Picture (tube, one colour):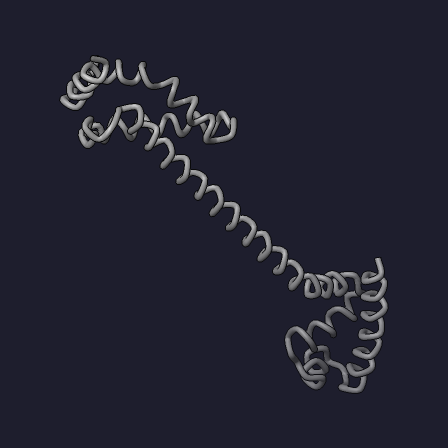
Length: 178
């Protein structure tokens, strides 16, 4: 008799009867929520989200429910299991991508670290050393071009570059040791 009543109520809900749908919702909400809580190992937030998705899915697809294939509750629990598996695979995918992103960021930081270290060292040098080193190594100017730009001789630029390199090495070594 109970199966016939449920079939009757489901058929009415499939026809758009709001009272029938409310009855199905109220009759099955707690058992579905308990099942979702069990699936999610006690994670209330996940269980509530899945429960909500179950009833939203059921409301949209109630026309596809076939009473001769099983009970309405079994159908709802099947939806719950599928939603849980989908959420779980989404979480696993998200964790995988977060880990991948974190690894890439870490690798990028490691790759950028020496370059950043060089710029920090340059910033600590006196301006005349910094400018001659930047002109030579960052801008790619020749000694003659630097001499022309600064209005000095190539020999004076070579001497300045030598002193600048020595100072850079000193500062770099001190920074590297700390």
